[in-house]
Length: 117
Image: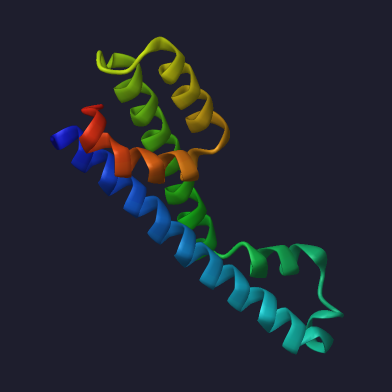
């Protein structure tokens, strides 16, 4: 069951990082909209430094790494499972590659019943 918990932990970390990223990014965008006159005379590099703050960069990095790892774990768990047919394995792998978030949710719901992990 530790495989399931590691997948769940990475999935939750990914969701929290996404929420933190969106909150930070929307705060920056709304600040630009509200104070657009103040930013009109600045250089483009200064504007980019304002948009790409360390908290945005860190949250995107954590989001990317955790998302990549839980997708890889999901693919490995499904590929190694002996209870899943080959056609189902192919669908799961395609799902994790193309729609990782949705496949992750479905995987978490069905993982215990199908004995993936």
